[in-house]
Length: 324
Image (cartoon, rainbow, N blue to C red; front, side, top):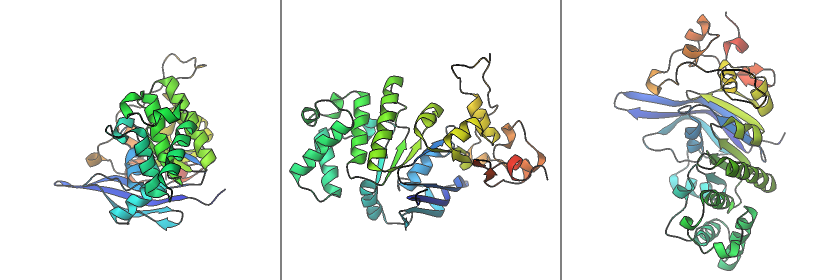
């Protein structure tokens, strides 16, 4: 196993309000090695996108990192000044967001945006930056790349715009890519192409990837490992095949049971009753206990930590200590 490129340790994110401080991420820890794709999955409000935003230094005020560490290549980056973090974000960390139109400036050509990014972070001249930009568009599967370099974002389809965003994310040859729901706004057939493209490019560039999504099909197709989040914490993490087929946490089991399969003979899919708790109403003990079909008294009193559960690690008293 390669040494981790990204190390997140006990990350804690708070949102101060007039009625008190809301804890949005609580004690989140994980690693990603070079060339590895880690999927982060969970319901809306679980803290997936917030984790990515905290790592790349784009938390919306009044959100703040209140504890823990984020290290990139052994160097701590969570406490850096804005300008210093901005240089790291462009050069060493690439970002791919859900809606490509929010990532692209509608007033500038695709070529200008690519060449500016390349020249900002790499010591190359204008001609070399343009050649690199054409090569990136070719790598991401955009036909007639040289001609399309001088077109504007509105002249591209949604799938093509997302390819341009991936090219932008790779422009400065980053070590880490944070991809936040990169296929949500696309048709299913285009989703598959983008996922295949992202996997290939990351393998070729040997970049580590944090892929945030709510789509377990994307996770199964793309990731090496997966972290399942619930109410601001990781409830299970491990190799993607084991988490999907031999999950240890009841929440993960419920998520997997709610996904239809081609060979499924069930008349009804499983469902998880209830909803994700609001930040100001997270219950004591295990946050999942009001919705858990296997809840015990201990689950309502004490919060479990991640513990070994075969090939995965799960934060559940069924794994970590039973009903004592």
